[in-house]
Length: 297
Ligand SMILES: [Zn+2]
Image 1 (cartoon, rainbow, N blue to C red):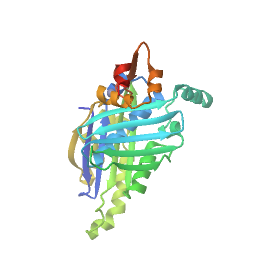
Image 2: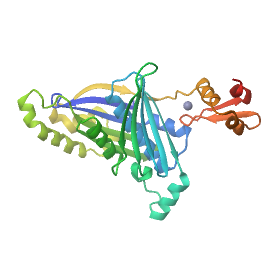
Image 3: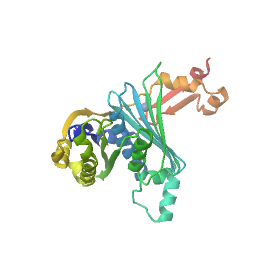
Image 4: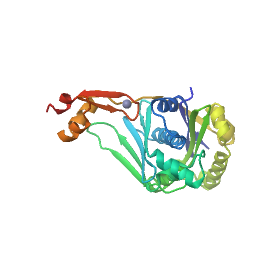
């Protein structure tokens, strides 16, 4: 019940929103791979953002949020399928993170995700399978927090006013992440004269209400209750509740295909005791191949 995203409307459809909380999905991600705290925090936050953005998009396939940077964390990936399967992973340099924290005397502190990526991009991809066009959106990683970066994406690429908060909690060694987003509907302020006049004021009120939400509330209360407490004066209406579970799509055939396409000399370099082994970054599954399986064609 804890890996949920709820879609809602405010003020008679002038605004739409999403609220998400992830719990077991993160536990699974962190069972398969152990990350230093700062990387775990970045993965948890990226996954919450990935689920929120995926839930705003209409697609049948895979949504991927990828963040690439030049810093100690070089890649963060979270992908979400239309069936609600979520997985995430990170590429990072543990030594560089440790050294940077020692230098800044910030050991034990969680620093904002963009801090660890430095210069880079946020990339959104929707893959709906063969014979469909890949949708891709890219924005510079500019902003102190991941929230700021995501809001820039919506403003610049989609011209939609968006307001967003992300939350993290680590309790008894267990990570949770959550987020809440509101957007002006593309039609808001269009037809109805009265609504148009009130729009800036209503938007500001909702932003202020969203600012008042604490991590404690979003992690302890039921999400519909959070929404009611925040927005009961704004005709909050819950539309849909979607569940998410951890799921990886790796398989032996796909991996064999990828490895087989490498140069024979590179395959030779990977051989150990006549075998080539590869581990899935998302789920930790180990695959083992005989050299002959990869070189035969
Ligand atoms: Zn896997």
